[in-house]
Length: 187
Image (tube, rainbow, N blue to C red):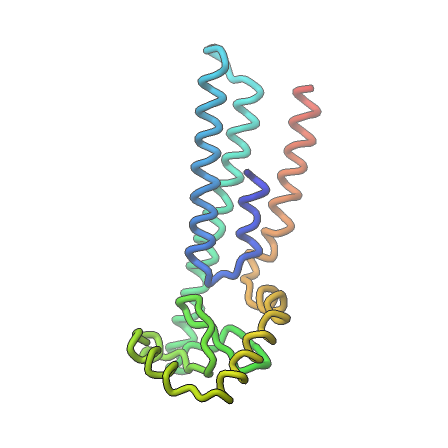
């Protein structure tokens, strides 16, 4: 579960539902594991070694959720500063094909200035744009969509927050050190 919670460090920082649901699921699973292990062990008045391991593991999972909260907050602060400077939210995705990922997590086939009017795109506008598209535009859109597949890895690496980058290394290293210490002491 601890390692599964680290997957969120590799998910794009704008994919809020993915990261939050992964974090909450791992936290709830760890609490279920702790409850199940405590119920199956004899009741004693002292701290057991398995309790130490599970509580520290649960702490690491919880820290991964807190890490995303910090990343999300700092990203929002950066965007507000950028919006105050230019009046537009800067494009966070540098893709060769003219693709922009809106805050709803969907890829659109035309470049969208991320100002307040484009953030309020409704389904009628989307349907109108979709019906206007010509067959030649459809083939271009398909090519762009296919070319996006090769760029996904680069997008994720370029558009992460510095906290995510450090967490990808720091969390596993600290957890491995904890495991070396734990298994050295309790075995």
